Length: 144
Image (cartoon, rainbow, N blue to C red; front, side, top):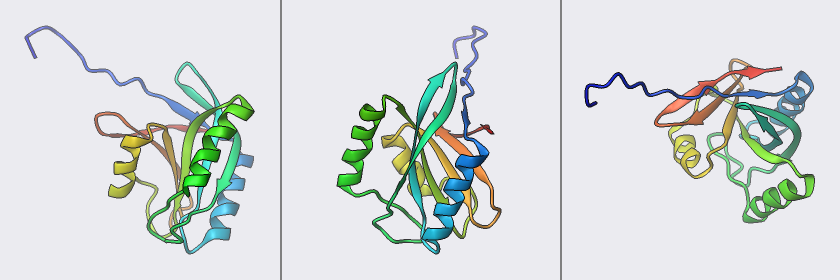
């Protein structure tokens, strides 16, 4: 700081996921247990609000309860779908079947390369939380 009255301000964003969309995600999570489930969230962004319009349920090729990976083919398809639907990727969803809805160290590493909103569902607490990586992890509100 150089003595000026400067503030670092993070623009708070939020993601809007409907109750019906949350049900789609929790059903997918149940189907994939005991492994992490994953999905891509497509939608629109206006005034720091990300509105989910479509969900693409994807396969966790790791078949792991503690991490997820999309295949290279799914990754390419993810971007093709974005163009075809004329929607933006507004989020990456995955579940923590046996954990809290908070980014793991692995999640944090991948958030750097995938600067989307990350939505995590806790199999323990049965809740959704959303996060973005700024200088550090920040939680953002979910609205339905």
